[in-house]
Length: 244
Image (cartoon, rainbow, N blue to C red; front, side, top):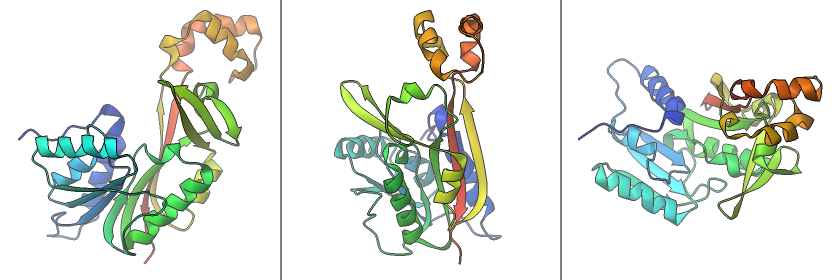
């Protein structure tokens, strides 16, 4: 069987696996360790990477269609993954059920209040001393208009493929506050310079109102060729430990 290879934007998940391995005592393995993925659906589920390590891999997702895609992938790869319908804001498991909990690119569609609720739920179902991985979109992204109209502070909605999709962005102080009740093992700010290639000169001109630099319109237009190094997507990842 070929090893599971996730998409290139999942490098933080591989780092999480390394952190889990480094946290083990001598002679201990990840075999049968219980891990929960909040937002486990999709055609290439990161949960498969952990099932491949012999872990007890459990996932929840609010979308049945996405769960079906993840289940099909697991069957194709002959991996044992337990999937069920569930909302990360009300995780359908008892307190202290899991050794590890993680979320990857799912929580970003929740409001700020619901994000805080989901993180508290992850903390609840994790055993004391257990390890979690999660991430949020940073307000350092640019242009913010690419996330659509701002409905509330940091909460933006845009029409994608005929449907409204919302994203929530956090300042550094706000994201740190979300995990203030955890022990933070590591924090990473991941910056990808993307989106500039698709901008026309007219679209670039329209972005002048939220230019990240204080310059004239003429100087801004002169920077059109630099757009590949200006447009950026920023995600903040946390590797956390539930206090004992």
